[in-house]
Length: 587
Image 1 (tube, rainbow, N blue to C red):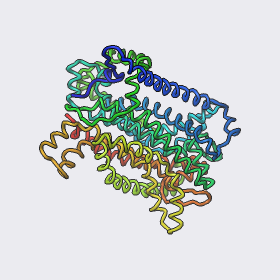
Image 2: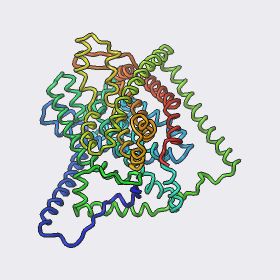
Image 3: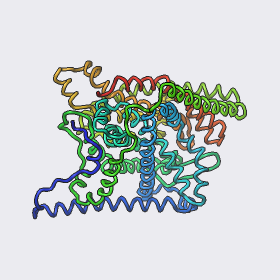
Image 4: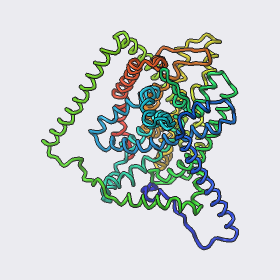
């Protein structure tokens, strides 16, 4: 079995034999120099970015956003730093939240519905209610506004990663679980040595998707407008917002070129090394001959600088894996049947009490802040947006599932397509506003229909990336068995590949549908200079109320969106999740 523990894979080992030859010394020096330059550049970038983020807030007025091309490198670095910080916080959130939800059935009964609500709340909804709070935490400093922007980007990244890890923990093969008991691993050791490595390929691909998906909402997170309060942070997002306001196509073209360069850089220096590294954790009996590669990973493996950098991480990892926390007993609780029933009654009574309290506050809010005609209107608008989301998810699934399987089974193809897919996933819908406005006005199209594709523009890639992750993690021995038994064409899809990638597809479809609801706020209202088109829907309603600063109606729209998403997930997606965890797993 190729799969092995995380403790053996966190730090790659170098096997040396004999002394270094005279001809090998210059090459090794180059390895060390390039690795040192990469590391130093990273630390300089972090220190510069943090100093800029903690500058006085008055600096925003002194240096307003400019469409000059020479400003784009600085704007790109500022945006990239915000997105990297959001990814780090998203990863920490994912490890804690998804693990607790998967390990505790009772905690999962609350945490997963809450996660459905969190992913359904649009980015503008978070910004509307958090900007003032973050500014109050750091008065007079730009750090408060930066925290609000990072938090907004975090809300577009974390939920996808959390669903990915939760799905992997729910479908961990039974023989791995049995092996953990045989080797007497504690719950802590089982998670770090078996469960997390098994989930690593899917988690890395979803992290990649989350990073790209953050670009989709970067305009809303950097050019913040809530009521009479307007805050613009230096970055690619605010640059794009200003270019749209002035109808400057040349500036938009330069922004697209800058985004392309940034995506290629973090693909080469971050995600491609991670994808190549995560191939070590594939769960299979026979190794594939076609494996992903990364020149950056190979460089650091050959560099002695890696030993210095990663030795402390290796010590910490070794210590963590030796700690025997959460002893496994085969049972969740040492309670008698009567005590277990009493505990269940108390638990559900607590949930009911919280639910009744929340319902009371909702009723009070509805009775005092909004009218019944507002509720009827919002319900109708939510049904229109729901119809758009369902149709778009079906169309996107039919297109991207076969393509994702093809790419995932061919690592060399994935290396070529990965940067392109990241760029397409990162492409903000705002950049297509000129095309949408021109087409609608020129051909007298119906905005209710032709603005809908903008909703799925950035979220369809959740399906593609998750299917690629599922196909990449598909055991090679099962592929060989199907090939030996000549299972082909539709039978191969129905009996082999679709069941294998379905858990991953399900994660992608859930996050894609939640992302489509989020994107409706951007896609259902299109502005290009003084021209504007609007589609009827819940997204355009929330966008309009946000511009007016009407917080009661913002809360009504966001609450209705959360309610529809939670109900749809509860009665459709969760049932598929249950089917997946029971029947579609490698045992």
